[in-house]
Amino acid sequence: MPPLTRWHIKSALVYFVAALLAGLGLALRSVMELPSIVGALAPVYFHLLMVGWVTQLIFGVAYWMFPRFSAEEPRGNEPLGWATCWLLNIGLVLRVIGEPLMTLQPNVIFGWVVVFSAALQWLAGLGFVVNMWGRVKEK
Amino acid sequence: MPRLSVFFIRTALLYLAAGFTLGGLLLANKGVPLTPEVWRLLPMHVEFVLVGWTVQLAMGVGFWILPRFLRPPARGDERPVWAAYLLLNLGVLSVAFGQWLAWPGLIPFIGRAAETVAVGLFAIHAWPRVKPQGV
Image 1 (cartoon, rainbow over the protein chains, first blue to last red):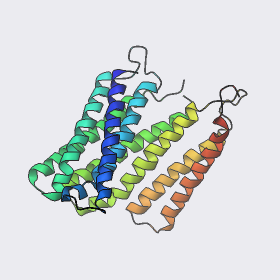
Image 2: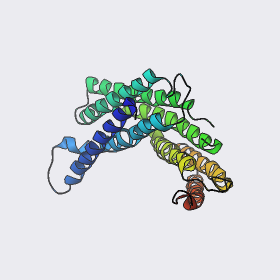
Image 3: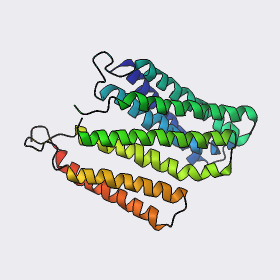
Image 4: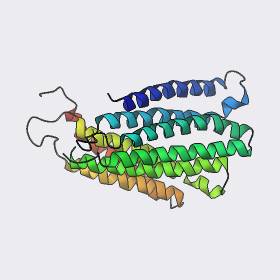
């Protein structure tokens, strides 16, 4: 298993646990009083699960298992693969921090953190598509 | 990788790009509001990333890697799966654009029905391929 795949899959596992903890916090609100920031975690919970866990697991496994691009670059452009990994993870972490803060205390700084996180995740998605496109091919 | 999987997976990649673009716009609009109109893209974002990307990728990879038959055709009858590919994408586009453009409710309903038939056809195709090796 290549190092980039290990980073993706281990990060995905961390997000999986974090997502379920966020879900647990959201569910706890119906049985006890919790700080208002917990209530702002609903979109974070869903995106930890779908972007952090599901999509990132797919990125890692696809990078590992999809047909080879060429003899010289079997897994496509490796620096682009690493850039995708960092962009996705930094973008998602910034979202996890910025989005609830923006919901509770809207201000310009938190607002631009959210915009920056959106841009990083968007670039990660495009980077993955560009890198995988040539590897999705007939034998 | 068989041609049908190439179609499924490359289409899924296009939906990933489109879904992430819509998601990026929606999230950026939370940080620095552009226009409330952006919120109308939410159902399209959800449809593209959940069905267009995730479900379609799973179908494409499943068609590729599930165990093959000893006698040709190795992956069984491909025609129902081609039909599933067309119906799934017809469904995704009908649901996404029907909700975004507020088309009559019948259009998203037909889209959901097309997706359901697509998944049913895929399940019927895949069922006998879920078997021990060498059978």
